[in-house]
Every structure is written in structure tokens, then in C-alpha cells.
Length: 139
Image 1 (cartoon, rainbow, N blue to C red):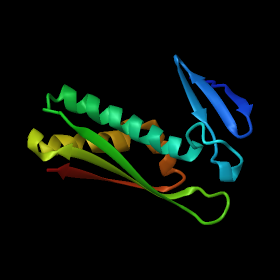
Image 2: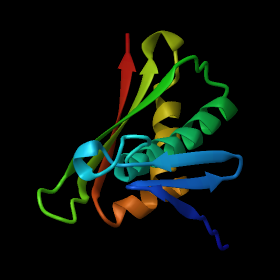
Image 3: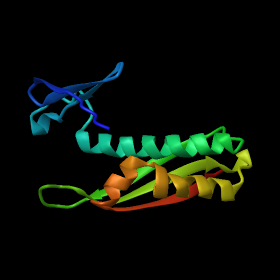
């Protein structure tokens, strides 16, 4: 299956991509020659990771009829010091509410399936970086 996107230069360091009915704008900060009119590409990659895995987990937990009222994802990442400054370590943190009464074994199963089978973004990033995850239950 082939996928093609277009990324149009908008001046200085800004670029825009049209993805379906949505526009994603990327830009650099003033220090790097941009005007901070959009997101940075590397954090956008981390956002794609969280969204990809998060959609997997939410879909599975809803199919398992889990009482999901809160689900947050945090991504912690470290980069190297020298160019290219790639992510050397990434950790996904899946956060749920204790008070929801989720079956923790079902949450673990959903997260594991996302990480080991379904999330394509995760699979790609694992080839380039140390990628781990953990589950947190918040009060």
C-alpha cells in the first residue's frame, strides 16, 4: 500500500502538509530562523507515536467493555548531543484513573498488543531507538 503526502514550503522555515481534511503546520523557533508558527517535526513524531498506540489501546479497552473515563499518554524522550540529534530513548507512559476500576490485566493486554503487534509508528521507532513503556494509575 502506497501513501504519498505533500509538504509545501510557506517561507522561512515553515512547511504545511494537508492530511485529509486537516492541515499540519511545522516551523522552527526564531533562534533557528523560523517564526514559531507551527510545531517542530521531531515532537510531532512523538505525538504520532502517542496517537497511534493510544488509538489501539482505547479501541481494545472499549471492545473489552472497560469503564474508561480518562486516558492520557505522556511521551518522554531523550536526544543525542550531536547531529543528527535523533531520539536515543523514548518512553511511553499510559495513564489511567484508579477510580475507573479498570481490570489491570486487560489494560496490560491492550498496551502489550499495541506495542508488539498493532502500532506501526512504534514498530518503526523501535528500529531506531530504545523504546519502552509503562502504565500508571493516577488518583
